[in-house]
Image (tube, rainbow, N blue to C red; front, side, top):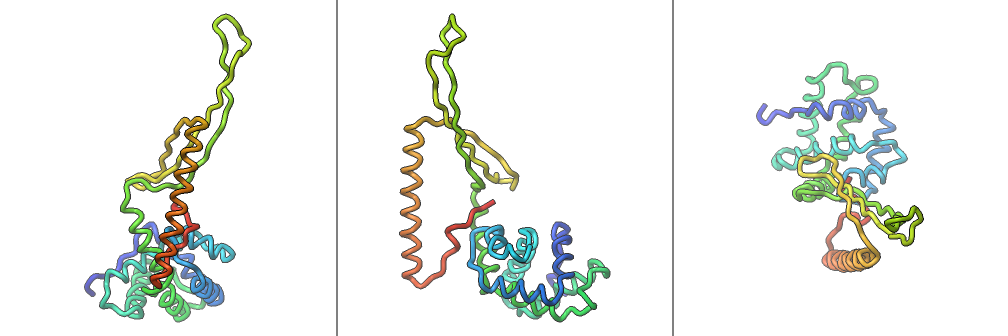
Length: 224
């Protein structure tokens, strides 16, 4: 078989859990994924189906399947799913669904990795975002009072207020990194104005996208 599918070792654990899901759980997952909105990251999708206890790793694995399907535009989804199941069976004969029936799993996969589904759009959006060298993950501002002592006394005469902006991000290698900036009150105000301006731009651009009849990734999602 040309372009034979290979399952990455990093996906084996989550894929095994997926194969072991009951038909009822598969149906619930498919129904939940049909209601989600595309986001800029897999965690965003995971948060929308949190009640099903689906972790981000499984979402990423399924998204990887969707991208692999996208790279083979002339292959029907059903054929791709058959190839994927064959790859799983070759990987480990012990990885089998309940009662050894692959039919519910194939049906679920066919719907989950649909090229026009939320998972496929999220996978493509995630690829686009990762083209940038550094991806924002989280931010926090810590505020502190620093006493200032005169030269010949242990009693402080003044105090300085220091704000530390701690930004977590994912670097070009995919690893977690962090950088810290010291800010004063004027810096905070300038930063707030910059963010408020960016939010207004974001809302305006979303309005343009909506007016054009296009869908947009969830503006509330965050890249982790």
